[in-house]
Each structure stands twice: as structure tokens, then as C-alpha cells.
Image (cartoon, rainbow, N blue to C red; front, side, top):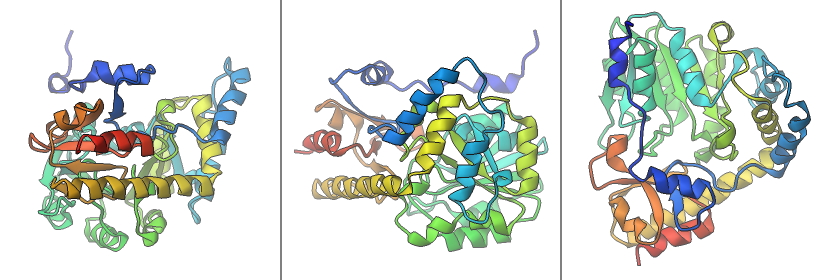
Length: 352
């Protein structure tokens, strides 16, 4: 059998402490899991109720077009219609769908360090990934990204805020960058951590999609909505691109419970904003403690902090964090998810 040789370099990610992380997922209290940027609170009550309601229809396929969910997302982003919204099995699937519609061969320009999935996803769909190093402040270097564009460039991914550095670019900078790119280059604005940005002006980032034909924004319900286990993400796109994505999308990839929970959660903006405020307060508490302990860290606009400490520092109080080298950072750095108040108490106890 002939297989694609490029796939031999694509391997699944296996965290060093995978067994311990799984034990937390199964109810163990021996460890606190602060590795995956999840929200330990889980879904809102309204989303939980919506999940239960779908059980009576579990023998039926979900809505192929995810119409109620797309309508809820469009209402939350004024000016867009459901036709501008695509959904996927997590925003990761939406990213793959977007790369899938691009001409090949070619390349995708990505910041680095950033979400490692970009590299493997590009290879799987037949594109090369060109990495552009973050600037000296751990931010996505837009000037360097622009300089990296060639005739082979099909898309540029801007992770904002960036994972794993946690840094953020103001909307005005992103807009200028998008306007400076050649018309045929797609800008994928990965906004998985959109809800944790402090800048009120950034709430209008979907306006970039309205103003152009080559900008797409991807977001997820896995973070502040607490629905990581249901795998729901979405993209905001110009109509022509959205239609292309739907034409190649795997039908029924977002299950009934996920669609219902996400739509219900999207309908509770005040509760979601309250969660966001709580996580921001906890983020500041954690960063202040890192500073007081003399640890170097990157000021974050997400629900995690990149800190200059090895994972074993936190493991002495039973807290699991993600090792920096798995994410493109040097050995000696860790990415620490911001947990709930009690989880963060246990994290900070390691600094005493």
C-alpha cells in the first residue's frame, strides 16, 4: 500500500504525565490538572439543561447545518448572518476546513511558538508551514510575518491572543496587517482566547470579516463556555469562503448535545462575561504571586500564564502544568492554566 510519506513526520501528542492527567478527568483528587487551558467549572446550568433535553433525540442525527447554533452566533456578532458562520468539531476542525479549501501546493505562515496543531494540520492537507519567530516581547511579529509572504503563501494564521505566550495584539494592528497583505492571501485570526482579552475595543473584531473578503475568525466553546468535552468551535467568514467550507465539511461532525449546549451558552452573555471577569481576577492573582516569588513570566491576556519555572516546582503540591518545551519554549518554562480559586490556591502553595 502506498501512503503519503509526509504523514510519517506527523505524530500524536503524548504529554509526559498523560496517565495522571487522565486520572483527574476520571475523578482523582490527587492532582490538579492545569495543563489544557480548560475551565474546570464546566457548562452553565442552561447548557446542562439543553444537553439533557437532547437525550430523547439521541437516536436521530443532529441538524446537519447547525441552524439554531449558527443563528445564536450571528446574533452575538452584529452585522453577520448565519450564512457567515461555519461550525466544527472544535475550532481545530474549522481550522482544518479552512486550510482544506486553499490551493495546493503552497504554504501557511504561522507565528512561533504558537499552537503546534497548525503545523500538523498544514502537513495533513498538503501545505507547508513557515514559522516566524515571536518578537522580543513574546508577541506575534506582524512585520516579520508580512515579510515572510511569498508567491507560495496561501494563508497566514494570527493567533490572538497567542497560545502559548498569552500575548495580545490590539485590533487596530491586526486590521492594518490584514489590509497590507496581498488580496489572495487568507488571514485566519485564531481567537480561541477571545473572551479573556481586557481591551473593550477588541469586542468588535468580527468587523474585520465584514470589511474584507480574505479574513476569517475562528473561536471555540472549549474555554470560557466550559464545553471542551463536547467539541464545538466556529468560524466567522465572508459568504463565499463560508460556502466553500460547508461544501467540504464532514456532515454531522458536531453532535446534537454539543450544538444545543453551545447555543444555550451563547444565549447567556452576562453569565459568560461574569466567568471571564473571574478568570481575569484569578489570572492577576497568579501573576502577582509569580512576580512576588521572583519568577519570570509573560503577562497574559488568556486563561493561562507562561512562567519561567519547571513543572516539577508545581508537582510537589500535586499540580500538573504543561512543560514549555512541548510548546516551543525552552526547557525551564511551563504553561500554567488559570484554574478556579481553590485550584489556584493549591498552585500557589508550591511557591511558599
